[in-house]
Length: 497
Image (cartoon, rainbow, N blue to C red; front, side, top):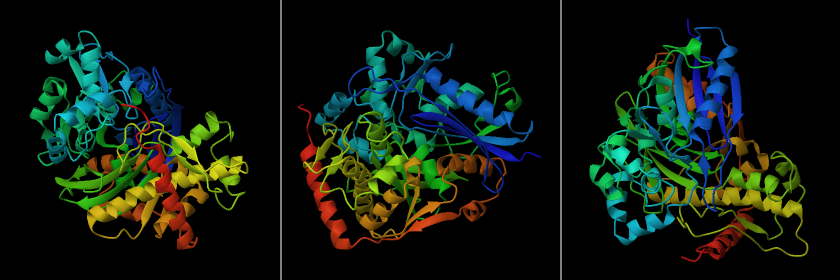
């Protein structure tokens, strides 16, 4: 009898595979690093064949540790908005994947705004016009790679976000789940279909788009003969969601008003708002969270472009720490940041500012500033950005959020989560099993293939590892937050345009 669900978790900096047992515990895990490519300032790319190869190798390593025939189903979760175009006949990418962080289409987005299209796009898709989303990235490839537009119009070139690419490589089916589709700037989140008029406005041929499908259903089965995955042939691929919606599902935020933040490369705060989309008035986005059993759930979302990547920059760019975990010990050597504020707008600012032209800044430096102050300021700025999102979310939803569930790589930092609880004045709950993004994909697949029977059963599997309660005096927290807002105003609109 199959004992495991295999989750493929394809992220911005790595491809991972995790096998979960019926209790939601990790039975086996593999991680392969994924190289980033930076052809110009502000441009970020991946090689789609490296995405596939690293994900395939991670999966092969995991299934090699499991008994043959023990995988009941496969779930896929992915870095969202990252855009891949490939030849339908050969499977060869026509260009590198343009990554969600890439800002090369900022000017195209400005042109769409000048044409007065913000309301049209917002009302249908729940999104703002921004270079973050897939639509303008597709347009850039069609406009800049010779011959691709003509081939796309003839149906010879396919578009997909990363889960589409992986499902196509595994099964030969060209599909995208509703959650990922809702991040393209081309998808009507009310009718759950591609918006043909928006596709026309953005110059994207509908022939290249994948079929939108629910998040928990069988998309196809693994094809025979995939190197390293031969024993998976015939296994259903039966769950998918973009990484943030997957983490919301994996954190079992199944009731309206429940929220989570993923402290990953970026920070992503999502709140379940139930069966009807809520229109944001505070610079947040509305997306499909998931569709399970015919029921569609929506989420409000705020996105921070640089969260954990700021810690990586401290390590790789400045050499202030030699490994990411060191930041906690260094930051703990000082009681506060000594007035230093870091604004990590390396690729602009996301919600609620949506400033493509902001750039990073370190403010408040004095002769007494030391490495530890900058380390503490980096952790503080991650917590401050999440606070921006949560305050906007409270305003939009019209209800208080009593608890924040935390996950992602940087959530291992006790110092960061304590800062978060202090700034928000609410408990921050870190689960025992922090691989919630992968578990969300596994849970969606497991529901589809009968491995788990219900969402109630999934809720019973979640256990808290630690709950952080506010400790620092509110006056101190308020003073820091005012300083943060001043620092953001200094970094805003930095690039001339």
